[in-house]
Image 1 (cartoon, rainbow, N blue to C red):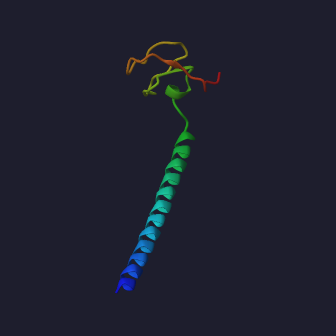
Image 2 (image 1 turned 135 degrees about the vertical axis):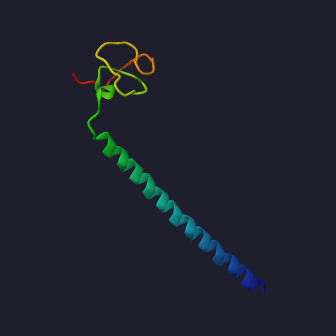
Image 3 (image 1 turned 180 degrees about the vertical axis):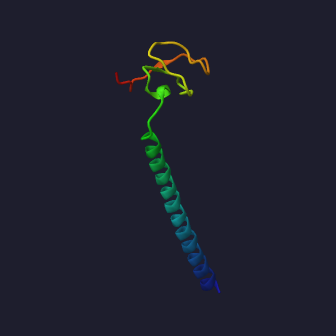
Length: 86
């Protein structure tokens, strides 16, 4: 009787660990898909809230300027855009 109980526990533990491994692989695939989606979204042409010399830290739509100032939408001070290309 003890042998059957121990054998059952061993089989059950193998099944549990096997299922957890498959779940991790699916989560990794999902994470990879999210990263790929982000890359695709970054290839889209961006507005002046991303491309101006000075930009709002929140990237509010319609914000951004070639001179230092404040965002007309949220009121935050602009920061220098280090990716700015003249």
